Picture (cartoon, rainbow, N blue to C red):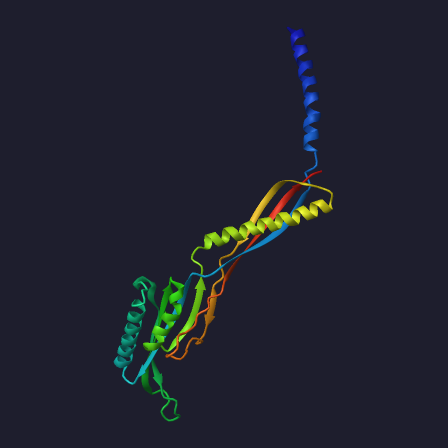
Length: 238
């Protein structure tokens, strides 16, 4: 019995001596060299919808008249815009304020001399060809200001996909050039991270759209750009 136990101990010891060097060798094996590269890609598209901010300001000595005048003008504008085919859900009040105005003469400073109502209506134009007509309809029905006009792309996902593909291709192209210069090959990928924004909004701000009411307002939406960035750690051959 003792003989068998001794043989088992010798066998286990020999086996451990065979396995230990292999495990030590694997643990001490150097990590494969890596190459970190940044890639940038862009995607361009024509905007397919616009948002128009229409300002309506009324002033009167009587508070009720200032308010009623503003409400009447806003209703006329909204009806005219709806007649163009704009859905009611795409017309909404963005801002509304009612305030007294005061005299500025030295001896009467602080006295109320009237009331001013400011009303901003936001219109989403899903058929971008109607943008100019919406602006003209607003101005011809009493709007005082087009405070902003912005163009966007409704399908942001498609733009992001193209931008990411271009960013990855850019990173791989850089990595291939660097690896060849070092006399190595790309054999794998260790890690990947990305940073993708949103399609830019082409925005015009300010009272830039007060055109003559007897002329059609020309609208040129231009194009939009989305930029994507990727960081890739490539594995290189030894």
